[in-house]
Image 1 (cartoon, rainbow, N blue to C red):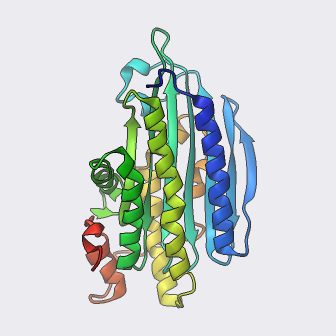
Image 2: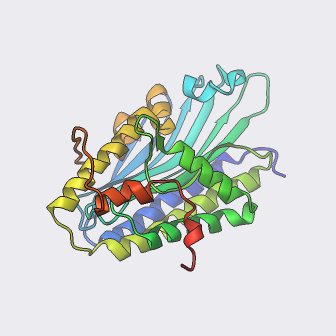
Image 3: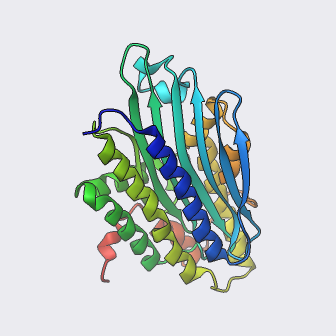
Length: 308
């Protein structure tokens, strides 16, 4: 059992993960490349925001690495840890959101992160968090099953109970309470993870981080050339509004970043480039647009469909 957290190992893993994901996404797009914006934070730390725009497949995407430090923990991080109030801290992670152009390709989000704080009168306290989720505009069962199969495989080395727990956590977390509606078809979410075995906890975070692109790439390849028209594009922009609502109202990473004086451009890079809100819009019954909320956004167990 590792007694002291190896922050340098986490740092090197995360910077490598950012590079690998960007390389795979560029190859998928086949046209646009990521631009890199390196930044520093006056309060301590910095990062690199990598953004792809106006590509053949990806209308906008951001893969952000940050490593920030502070003299005292922000309120969002001490709500459940009052003993850490006033402790110096550092946080590092990779966070990404990909908004494809084609409405048949779902938006995807992933995040893996590491926090550590050192109280004046105690040992360092660390925790890991992360996960990924998928937000389709037009659903396909095989995409949903594949996404969850990869998620389950990433969790299996750490116990049979991990995937069901993190899947349920994801369903509960990515939920728009004011709409009474899931954001998407779920995936994995975990936070505040510290088993006392740093090496094992770090391995779990790596397994989740590494599996994201394996879950997403086949779905993009299947759907990126599917034809669509103005109706599908308009519906996509309308549904993107739900994404914006969640990120600005509920997302912990957004709240932590803003409360801790983070870099606004990097924090809000997750927002789509185009979006619309329609008053009291209700899809026509029996349409694929209605099927999204009636069938896909229901927090179901997609692995029940394996082999179907």
